[in-house]
Length: 111
Image (spheres, rainbow, N blue to C red):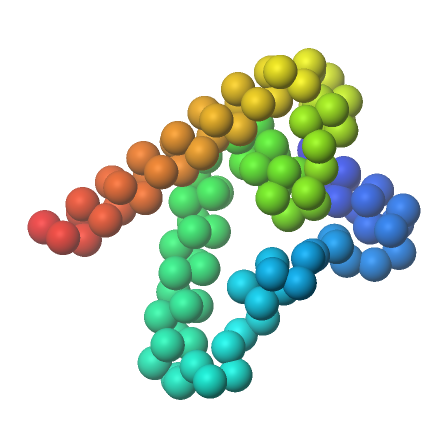
């Protein structure tokens, strides 16, 4: 579902998702970053991607629409066929599940 929405948004915008200046700094690599920091950052991004993939599809979809495409609750609700209030609940649950997955991964690595 998110893939189809992504294609639709891409065609409508005729460009990649819009990012603010502050968000752009987080996405672009730091030019002062050394090879070790770049490698650590890449591993962290891969870990996050794996944790997102482990989430339920609706959680992954809502987080993608909210944080990648910066869609409003109403827009997400329309795309998913749910109310805006339900979107907020799903986002909350998705973030909670993501935090739990991260905590479990950290706990497993520290043993």
